[in-house]
Amino acid sequence: MLCAVYKTRKKEGMYLYLPEKDNFADVPEPLMEMFGRPELVTILALDKRERLGLVDKQKLIDELTEKGFYLQMPPKEENLLETHRESLGLSKTPDKKF
Image 1: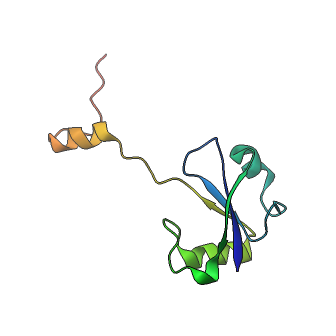
Image 2: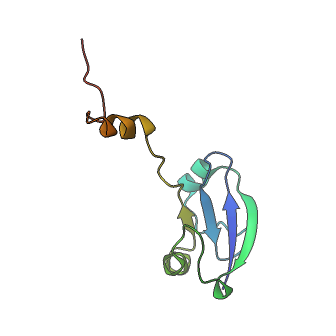
C-alpha cells in the first residue's frame, strides 16, 4: 500500500496521510481549512516499512482504509515551568493573588 504524506506550515509536526496522492476528497473541509495548503513530503510504501516513527502502522492503515485519511498531530510539548515547579515540590501553577 502506498501513502502520500503532506505537511502544513501552520503547525510544526502536523502531517496528513492519504492513500492516493493529491486526492483530498475524503478529508473534511473544516480540517482542510485548519491544515492550510498541503505540501507533499514523501510517498511511502507501507508494505516495506516495519515502523513509521511516531505513527502506529496498523492504526495508519486502518484509518486510511476506513476514513480515507490520517492526521498526525505533533507530540504534546512539555511545559518546562510546570516540570520545574513540581521538582521543587510546588504546585504546577502559582496561586493567584489579588
